[in-house]
Image (cartoon, rainbow, N blue to C red; front, side, top):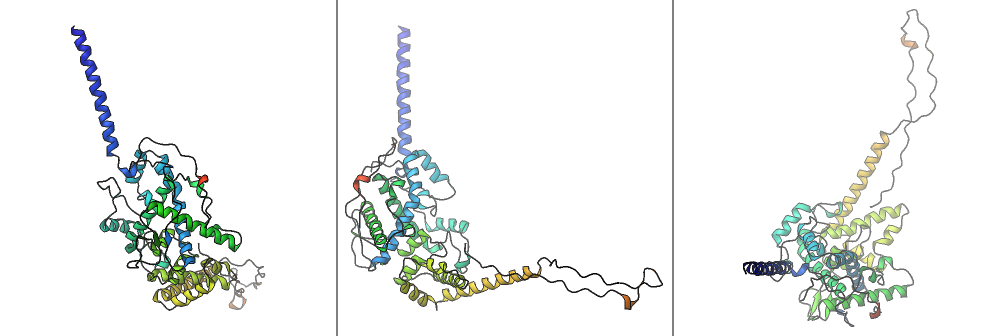
Length: 415
């Protein structure tokens, strides 16, 4: 009888241990924030109609639509891996312990904890100050102003707000079942080939796709805008400021297309960025004088040349443009001076040397008279160095094209 009682006690203990283990597992799952849980791939469909852009210039709006999608597509392959292929534990560890910054916001935003509802907390201005002081640096075109990844300090918060919109768009791509390779039907402007009609058709397709993505992410909105902000009179309007789109996209030095377009649409750009346009134009003019015309052609290839020239004229007398031109002239003079110094200290010419003059013998061995001393030979010629040119480093996608679902994990977002 005693043995039976012992067996019952062991059975009870085992049940209590199993119950405790299950409770601990459930507790760990509850501790995992909502933002870290895997997304439910293919659980929704994109709406048939998207948000409408209410900017007055359709061409300018399409140019910025292109920039938004190029940035989203560039980030999406990493986002898909993090939100679908990684376990929640792996993703959370990378987000909270990495030195780069929050992975979902392009590393420009530091991880600063979670909100009570399990969402990521936006950093305070003081926390951004700490990051900026640690990572800001100055480049040639910045006119003495330090920036973090080409972004000034006062633009970090607006930048983060725009990247949060991009994060919502990528989340909707996952929920709609798109894998990174499934976006290849969208061809960005810098990769477009074909006739002007074909290029216009692709631009319209990209704008339509972005509008549907925005409608999926913001179902209560009806419009979005790049060049209108504040009290513009449009209800239910999503604002994606043109300057933050540019700062997220970050064109290469010789391409100033978004900045030129923003200036043409009466955006007030900081003097440093006005200087950046002038700096690029000055470099392009220098290269054009040497016969390299492609620099000028690449500054704003998708903008009307007349608009480009008008923008150049409008910024030509600004303080930022004057300083940029002065800086470019000084830099060119410094390079020329450096090349000249190198030429003067260059290797000597190896031309045939004349035979040494004959020396008359004297009565005293080892001595010679002043009249019989050797005359100095001709100066050796130095090669002339040529200064090298410097170079600066709306058709909609078919619903039947939706990809198959990716492997699922047990932990899913339920909101």
